[in-house]
Image 1 (cartoon, helix red, strand yellow):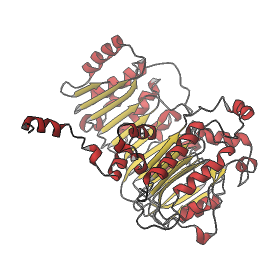
Image 2: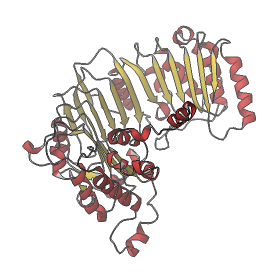
Image 3: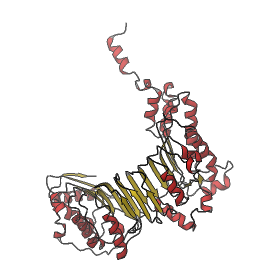
Image 4: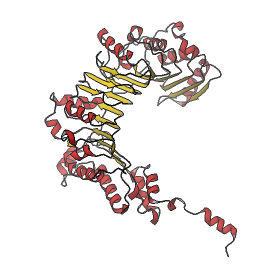
Length: 494
């Protein structure tokens, strides 16, 4: 008879995870990269078919990964299969494994994502087969919902616009450039299980009006599509439950109307030919805009809410003319009820902030992104803070994105007057300051010193040094900054 201690030891070593049902194991494995989830089959015989219950399939190239090997594969390939073999073989094996292992009680696929660095038309047959398997063959009320993210080209949004401009096409449908894009199957536009649709660098070719049926689609991102603005508008109008809409690098899109649904989030990125957008903003909580300076009539809001939770503004091109400043001022006034504003200020000349920055009375969190490389930039930050009387959190990201055009400034550094930073929100309300990519240059020190010396109720300071700063310099800067901040505030240096 076994002793009680031996029974207890045997019980403590029992593999409780392997005793879980297949659908639970598959749900857990779905949070891992697919290759790692597939390796779980090697753990034990019980795990051999666990991948059949994984409900997420995701594979992607790295940006630029295929840049140098297309010519070699074009001349040497005998299978007429592109050099994205990692995605092609990975997704093919994953879908085959699900089909082989799942048995009669197959777990529905909830998420399917892929991203080609640059797809080739040789891969069309494989993608057709994937989507034929992924899309439900009939209406299914019990389906938990399908999320698709299909990217046929990896690049920044601005780079996609440049690629189209270099092609030299000005028509609604881009001719030769459009011919080589993947044509999405028409069955996708009648998939009632679809809840998220994100598509990049492909073609729509929508079926007849009555055949477009996406009753449960809530999130849509359309990027660099070659279709006409009419088709894009028609697709948007066919989604009665749409709440999150992102439009990126849609060069054929001239006008958009979203008055028949109430969005929670709207993002417009680099749609440089877009002239106007009409939207029911009664429930809108988040707005993102990046591109050129918007025209005064660009955004028309119907039923605007009292406050907007978040706004992000970024300009692709530096402004220099007063007329451009006036357009941007008018646009900012329409979002002046925001509580959180993320502003890329690197594309704005500092003189704009002297006269053109409107009052943001509801703003409690401000994020400013851009280089701090002159005393005039330091003064501009002070001008912005004067227009945010209820600010509580200030975040400075001191590096601009590489694809943004920054204003050239003078190398001359002059110390601004201290009264410029004697600002009510700094002295009475700002409780947290976040500094990211700090390297300790003279303009950066000037700004941080003026901020910390005037932030009298500061409770928390977080500073992240830029890469390449030595440990000795970090220690010196930490001591220096510690002297500027109020003594009782928490300080975190990373």
